[in-house]
Length: 116
Length: 110
Image 1 (cartoon, rainbow over the protein chains, first blue to last red):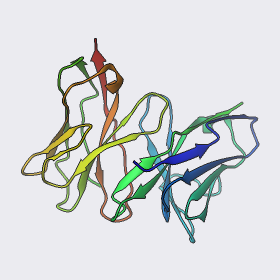
Image 2: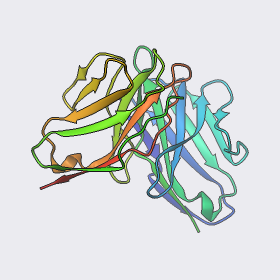
Image 3: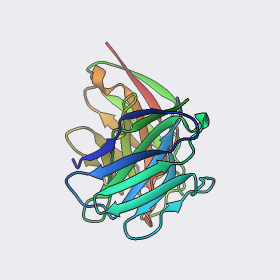
């Protein structure tokens, strides 16, 4: 299947700093990508839809000024967690749809963020 | 969004078929059913999807009832590496967003 990568795979940062996570589609172009967050022993929660060439759309309850999304190209979306706090510690996962009708989403391996 | 309901956990003996059920009684006529699995600390892995016909690929089979209100994912010969959380998802026809439910934690027992 299609390959989606994320970088970094894990990051530890101090409270108050900002962290950028990259999501790349390696063998296909993606005009849309999705960002999820997953807390321990919980399911994935959709945070936002990243759109190439336009603003991201955020799910209800997700602060757009806290989680900045930039879809820089057809193969790259970035999520920046601004002024991170310990409660932002989580597993962040991106996905990108592919196929003739964008019918199948492929997920990245995830980025584990720990804010001290 | 069509909501899905899955049993929280299941066990299956190694080598036997694993049958994972999913209820999606509010599904719309043009919404697809998808199955993904997530092995601990990894991103979800695509397994299979379908609209109304049964589907089979190298990983699994998907059986969708005629009224489309439920489906079953079948892993024909479960191995220890199939131990994972399995998610049944109904895809919105606009926007392509996936909304994950709580999934079924499948444990394959030696």
